[in-house]
Image 1 (spheres, helix red, strand yellow):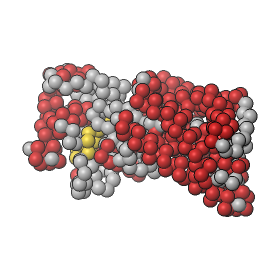
Image 2 (cartoon, rainbow, N blue to C red):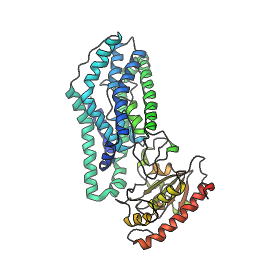
Image 3 (cartoon, rainbow, N blue to C red):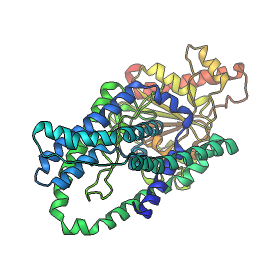
Image 4 (cartoon, one colour):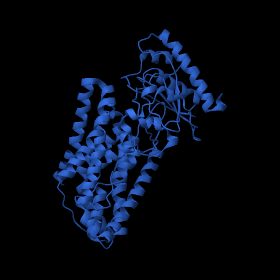
Amino acid sequence: MSLPIALGLLVMMYPVLAKVRYDRLDTVTRDRRLLIPSLVLNWVVGPALMFALAWVFLPDLPEYRTGLIIVGLARCIAMVIIWNDLACGDREAAAVLVALNSVFQVLAFSALGWFYLGVLPGWLGLEQTAMNVSVWEITRSVLIFLGIPLLAGFLTRLLGEKAKGRTWYETKLIPRIGPFALYGLLFTIVVLFALQGDAITSKPLDVVRIALPLLAYFAVMWAGSMAVGRMAGLDHPGRPRWRSPPPETTSSWLSRSPSPPSAPPPARPSPESSAPSSRYRSSSAWSTSPSPPAASSLGPQRQPRRSQLRKVPPMSDSAPSVLFVCVHNAGRSQMAAAFLTRLSGGRVEVRSAGSAPADAVNPVAVRAMAERGIDLSEETPKVLTVEAVQASDVVVTMGCGDTCPVFPGKRYLDWSLDDPAGQGVEAVRPIRDEIERRVRALLAELLPASA
């Protein structure tokens, strides 16, 4: 591997792995609905599918056919990280699945190569080939291209949060280092194709013949992963199902594509593995398309004046979606989201976020809502993102309107409410009741029949 490509891959992976919340990885590792389909798709379905496609499309080209089969055995540990992040997949799920597939790659790659190049062709009466691969070479690649950026990302979050807290880390540091993932991606793609330029231009027919099975592999694995994710009931945190790609952004990126061989075919795929997802208690959702490069930060060019918050574009015809935003996402927005979730009976997609989220929901707000039979004890504050606003029909701000980005086609409301922070339950009850009153009025507008 050339040094420029290696550096490009490391630069590309580091910012994404720095975004992972490592304290939440245990919830992914306990989710069998996520892990089992991932392993089956990657290590049973994927290799078998690529073997079949290689023989169907390249029966007369043994070198390309063998290379394609080997590509189908190699799970990607680099590109998948960035593709998953661009597709708004679950970062924690992606980190766990990539690590898990890396371990399987070290253990199973040689055995699978022996089976699909030597044993299975012999059973079927086809031409047999051999493959000698050093386990150490595979292990070294995994340690370099997963271990280094993973360790760097983990230490960045650990030391950054310890020094200045999670709010500073996610609202100040991450937006600064985030764009480097795209810089690394573009640099890597340019260098890869530059190094393969002669092969691409001198053998265009070979390029097309290699591209066809890769495209077929992509289509089958992507659609299959999406279908498996739906059947397994996997959800994506933070976006409404009704808007979206089906459950499984991470899943589909991970399982749909293998990693390139050392001399990659020009028509090379990218990610691999399977299944993103985690439960989001108030709502679950999916984004329809990758966000623009600057979507990870709320840049000053997107910050509206308060006078802009009253512009009301038309709603969509689909089930409505509401985003509640306050400063810390620890009191007002959490209570509003909980009320709308209960009162709508699932007919409205509900999310909440904060411009500077706290570490936990205000315990007084939890107590006040418990008096109404609503449990907020397991909710966690979430950071406000451009993507969350883009995915919502109605955005309700509660004291942080100047930090909420404005997009066409959204309805903006600004509810002036006292902040429950630092107040006793007696002072919070009137705030809670006023929030409920406004939520009921909003629900009557969103779903007139419910009035």
